[in-house]
Image (cartoon, rainbow, N blue to C red):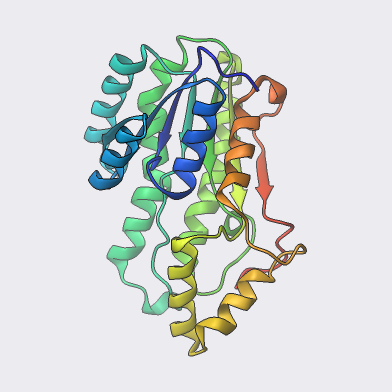
Length: 254
């Protein structure tokens, strides 16, 4: 997987999974640009040698400006990794706030729409470009108490499969990654919210999350980074329109 001379944009790429993905591509020789909504994380990414800018992917005007910056900084684009996403509200559907529901879709699906829409002129300039969208195990399974998140991640898979058809003639492959529960602060917050909803100890809910896959363990950010690099590489030149599970064979979501 040699990405020398390839140009990669990773959204929400200054923290967590996104930073692991950005670092993987950089280690494989790519020129990498990351965007993140967190100014402190962006500054840290820049200190660590990544080109980076603050941007909110749920704001189309900011995304349009971001792509102008990417074009100026990288001279084009070969790989777009749509990693930005939020957990959304937790609770039975009738208890959810409409604003929180909308915000989940604004980031998780509308943000991917904006990024793809405004990246396509750059991606079409190259050959054999790739888009990698982050979905979730919740994008193929139901998830009680997480209807906004799950619905938005199912939408990512539908968007991915449709764009694979639309963009195939342009030699742009589009795939989604469906991670299971990924070890880190974000899943800790999700577990805490779920424990509160179920009125159970956090330790008990955490055990459920650790054991929801056949392998009985959480996924690591590096696992997602490896799949993103593979999906965008020449090794996957005929992998298109797929929802690629990296979840230890998750059987049920809690």
